[in-house]
Image 1 (cartoon, one colour):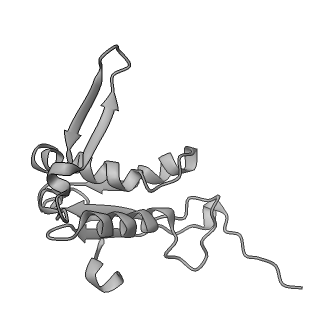
Image 2 (cartoon, rainbow, N blue to C red):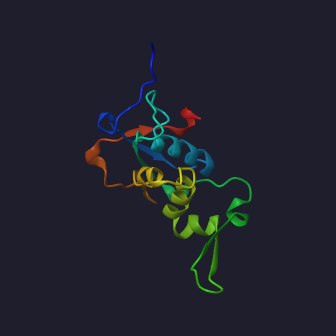
Image 3 (cartoon, helix red, strand yellow):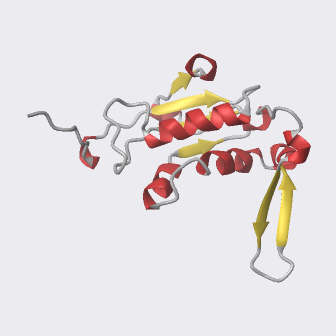
Amino acid sequence: MRTTFLAKPGEVEKKWYIIDAKDVTLGRLSTVAASILRGKNKPTFTPNVDMGDHVIIINAGEVALSGKKATDKIYYHHSNHPGGLKERTAGNYRQYDPEKLLELSIKGMLPKTHLGHVQGLNLHVYAGADHKHAAQKPEMLDINKLV
């Protein structure tokens, strides 16, 4: 009788990946990063265990937005006070806070549970080409070959 393999949290081996966001479309980058954070790229994927790897995204300020998304895509948040609805365009985020733009996009694709929050903590986004995770010996990942 064959049984389904279920991974246990202690058996998971986590890797580190670097993704260069320069001239890569925001949606393509987000789907690949969310898939790696969840661990769906592994053959032993188990949905209730944190199987995901760490993802480092560099050059977030140079991510591409297709079409008129820079001006037409609007992100809303509310301060929970009367009249506290705030809005920013994707182009504004890309110019002034590119890390936040990528975090909103990628974390929006993760599950809205405690496990999704824990998986989101494995995301590291940097606006420039420098990062502080050289000691982990991350692998460079080419988005264009994956998608």
